[in-house]
Image 1: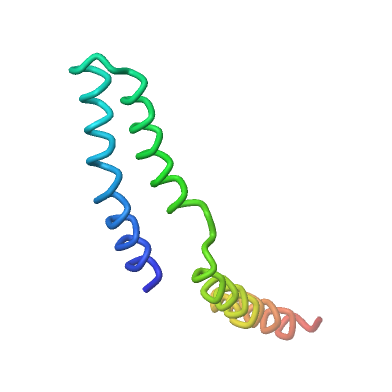
Image 2: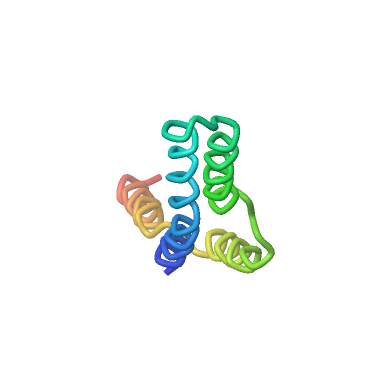
Length: 94
């Protein structure tokens, strides 16, 4: 479910970042104002970077829950391998 929420958040940021990037390209390439164009392109890139890599206060409970679940729940494949090894050792007389 976190994947869906992350996708929706990214789409919301892109709604704001894409027009800013297009305006920046227009200023830089068409209107001949590279300063404004670079500022707008930087703003658009900054929006995406901040949304993607900065941890917000609303993300902290999700991070804590994923760490707790990861430490409590064991991988079923590794548990099967351990049981199989114990069974083989017992059968071999070890």
